[in-house]
Amino acid sequence: MGIARLADVIKEEAAEAVSSFPLRQYRDRVIALDASIAIYQFRTATPKLFNRNGENISHLQGLFYRTLHLLENGIKPVFVFDGQPPDLKQPLLARRAEAAGARRDAAESRRAENLPRPLKQDCETLLSYLGVPYVQAPAEAEATCAALVKSGKVWCTATEDMDALPFGSLRLIRHLNSKNNCEVEEFSLPDILQKLGMTQEQFVDLCILLGCDYCGKIWQLGPKKALKLLQQHGTIEQVLQNIDPQKHPLPANWDLEGARRLFLQPEVADPGRITLEWRDPDPEGLVRFLAHEKHMNEARVCRRLQRWQEAQPKPEEAQPKHQAPREGRKQRKLGEFFPASKHARPPEVRGVRARPPGTRGARGMAQGIILC
DNA sequence: ACTCTGACTCAAGACGCA
DNA sequence: TTGAGTCAGAGT
DNA sequence: TGCGTCC
Figure 1 (cartoon, rainbow, N blue to C red):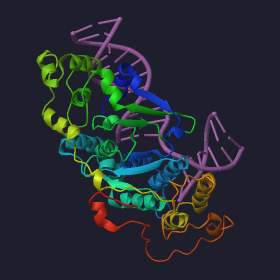
Figure 2 (cartoon, rainbow, N blue to C red):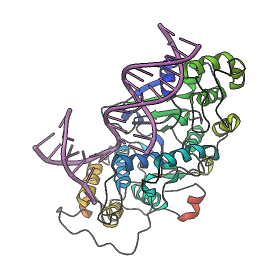
Figure 3 (tube, rainbow, N blue to C red):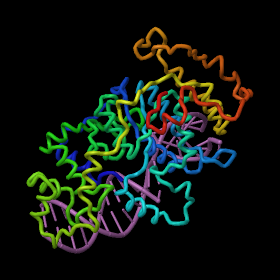
Figure 4 (cartoon, chains in turn cyan, purple, brown, red):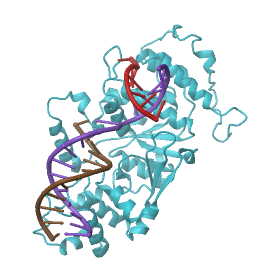
């Protein structure tokens, strides 16, 4: 859900903190994405994409296309998976579950916080074959994204909801997945704080008043009033002393301190222990996994990979610092690998399941440090 | 006039052919 | 199903 | 560009 109306408040009250750039502006930038939200979007946007085994593979198709799109534009994505949702979020999740009711299939209805394990493993496998790193967050993905930005390992967080700002992400971009002709919208946290005349702590208070996932909001206190009162009085405690409690009753079980703590001292993966590396996608592995194992249309997979390779800069135009070949790794040309005809038989799949190249087993994942 | 709430509607991802 | 956008109606 | 299809 994010922070209700926060984008509107910022655009109205701190318009200078919002810029628009074409996607190419982010070439060579490292961008953290909330994997769970992306996957959830793919599942809801294409809910009826089943393979011949009856498995829903919309998340794989979506992740495959979107990641290649980012790579083609020179962006270095890092996907961050949600961990355990904080206790304060439980009431919200319970309400969602109740609203969903019994009629929905549990596996389908689960929102991003609780991605079923096989679904998540599929995505990790796909990302490994795409040569894209991913990180397991201990709690909220957006909090770990923000920590990565603060550490300097990542340039910005790409997300459609605004949680990353109160978590301290210095930059947040939206509409990254839009078509090429659309511009990416960038929010600068330092500029927002400066224009609003607030500290990060006060900004967190503002987000809590606007309505966040961790506690209810105060009756009859909308964005305009909340901003004005906070700018006037500095903290929520002071605001409460200056409004009529009869007209603005507090919600039940309102844990202000808990919500503040979650934003200001969230549980995050330690950026110092995370090494991010990108490799070229592995076409052979991708065809084996997507087409042979997951039964995605092979011609589509190959066509898309072919397009990706055609978009790659020629060796002489390539920038050596980003294209340093890894030792002992030789990429086959697509022409050597892809069948000449659409109808040609794919190479035989051997064994149960190929281990994605470069993954280091479950131990690293459990620690939230995934090296690709 | 301004602000807030609640009810309502609608699109949601990416490709490729026409 | 969810969230964003829009609108009408009510409160200040 | 719009719309049907992806499996």
